[in-house]
Image (cartoon, rainbow, N blue to C red; front, side, top):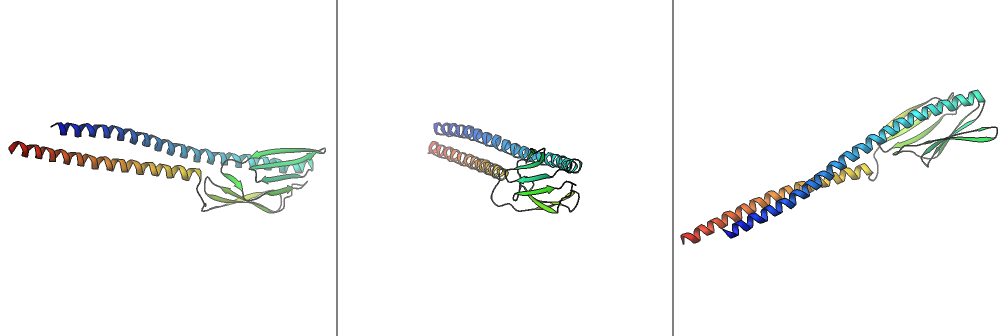
Length: 206
């Protein structure tokens, strides 16, 4: 009977530690999923805001070139910003628009808006890590209009979101392993207890 009580005590101690581990991993997994989802939503929202602001600044630059008869240069920098620059009385004016997280250009580009608002045809290629999309921003021949062409692409390597999702999968795998181990240990303990009871019964009858 003493041996039976010792087995029960071990079972309770193991279950407590296991439960704490499972709870901790579950909490971390939930936080990872919430955090990764929030990052995707925030970056996607940042892209929408960027394109709206870019459109306003672009139309303003076209209007400025026509009204003031000034050349406006639009630089798409690899340092994650778009720069609208022009000269007023030999003074350089620069209006900087930062690119949002996860959006970048393929290479450095510059578009020149002439004094009459005329723009040569040109294409700026963008990469959006948030939506796995390559974006062709095509500026049309003429008066500064542009359109977009989008296509999904396969990324090489792993992003932050991929890492977080992988971590969540690992956590779920660990939880499944612990649960399986717990069930196996319960069966082993139960089997040992039954063997002990049978042995004690046999000893008493003997």
